[in-house]
Image (tube, one colour):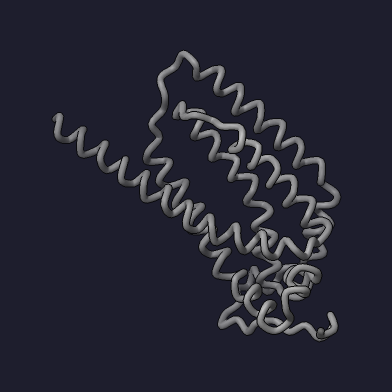
Length: 206
């Protein structure tokens, strides 16, 4: 097993300025100093979704297909970028340093600026992803317990894990980016299809 100080990083063909300028110490300090914000966001989220369901009881649903296309396309693009920037470090670590290192050493944050930046973006993305539920409420679709519970716990867990530099989060982050790349792409395409069919039906009526 190689020592921690001998960890090598993958050779990126290109590194953006916002990646090379990333300082993990600053973001970690901010997350530690503002850890209560996560609970405030969760509280606002729960008020909005359950209060929204109450207000929507006797109101017609919103279609929001066009906005839904844009929303899912943005999240799919972000997830794809995150996957492309974190997978190389993940594969490099498994190949050169082994399974133990991938689970127990947080070099993906502390020593790799690219992976570190996209880890930070991953944590922050859990906040706007709460917006998925707003669409469900406004479109009057079934809101199951697993959906909102998942969003809440992932947000709080990601925030806490980042402050602790949880090494095993490397697996969770890469997996989540990859899954969301496919999931949001599928949602975007489905929303596009529904939007197109709606427009076609409107034109046919006219």
